[in-house]
Amino acid sequence: MTPQPGKRDLFTTRFGAIATTVGSAVGLGNIWRFPYEAGTNGGGAFMLCYIVFIFLLGVPVICAEFTLGRSSRSNYFGAMRHHSRSRFWPLAGYIGILASLMILSFYSVVAGWTVEYTVQSATGALDFSDTGSYHDHFDTFVTGNWRPAMWTLIFLALNFGILMRGVSKGIERFSNILMPVLFLLLIVFCINSLTMDGAREGLTFLFRPDFAALTPATMLSALGQAFFSLSLGLGCMLTYSSYFSTGTRLGRSALTTAMLDTVVALLAGVIIFPAVFTYGMSPSAGPTLVFEVLPSIFHHLPGGVVWSTFFFFLLFLASLTSTISMSEISIAFFTEQLKIRRKSAVILNTAIAAVFGTLCALSFGCLDDLRLFGMTIFNLFDYTTSNIMLPFGGMIISLFVGWRLKRSVLVEEMTCYGTTPFRVMGLLIFLLRWVCPLGIALIFLNSIGII
Ligand code: PFF
Image (cartoon, rainbow, N blue to C red; front, side, top):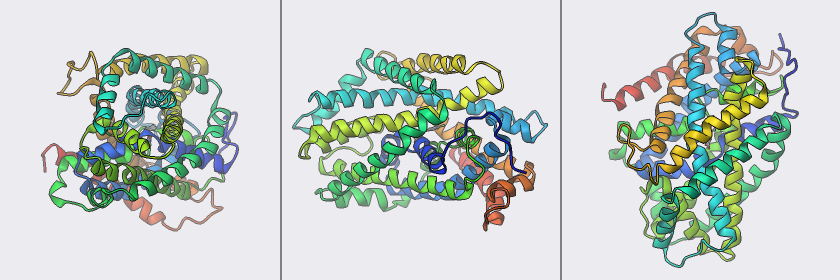
């Protein structure tokens, strides 16, 4: 049976559906988070785990989210309810909503940094001849309290403006044009980095696994990064796929999204690490890494100011396509489950993120001493969402689709209601039933020292 979209606002083209999904996946996770996580977790060993987790655990979970979203035409919570009478499964929806609001809060801070750097590049304030100055400059900005907080709020206001305009009009137009431009720019910078003196050292760091660095903590970080980067485990892909038309091929879309997302992360790594070794910086600088290395790269390019302005601007737009997607998770829940009007739901979503986003922004400055479990608020939100909540959500989704959902629903969705072949159904079911839940559980248990 083909589900009836009813009054839901569907993506108008199939390309739009893919571009928007990729737009959600590609963002600061690839260009800011991937290099800093790879840098602090030993490079090659992290990279190896990351790639294995993307394809072995990530792709099946995307298929599962797509199946739930399109078959129910509903949000995470509604989808679980649609397919099960049990009270237990929909609870996972609450974790997804909480995670989406927490991510929106700290993500907006980093997106705010991209706005600051766009403005600074354009005004020529971001151009120093010695590399150390980029570190000091970023440090002064980020510890300065009011500017980071102001940009976080301005960014959230822009996000709010776009959300008010609805799904297809607001998002589709943006993603279709700008993602390919960002991609081209990354390729240009990648070629530039490959000609640097430290290229060999950088690539060795990123691609040659040092198995001594393959610790349980590295594996957990790689798992978290894979889920974060694919916007997975919190119902984001599920919510987006509820707007897919019935002809969108789910398996192919899942694989395309995973591949493009991985390529962008790899490009970012190939841009950053040769430069890190060329300019004698430390790969393990943490969340500030990219904001210190990229301006140094641009400084050495002819017309660096223009590249820099353009790049940070595109990075800001890539962040917007991701924050819009994560906002839609709670907005869909507020409107469809709590029956709140869309306008009020958007206001609620923005208000929550504004409060917690400000706290995250200040956690590099006046709230630096406020530690919970030894982490600042920013780090706590970043760590717990990526490394715990998203993989846990992924485990629940794979268990639900693997064991609880009627097989016929999975078959219908993956074959577009019997109109296209899907040859790896047996493999997908095996991965969802066994490999994803057990793999994630083992990585969790391993990281807390139980195995
Ligand atoms: N995948 C996005 C990125 O890599 O930047 C981040 C993200 C978007 C996470 C949407 C979660 C989400 F729901």
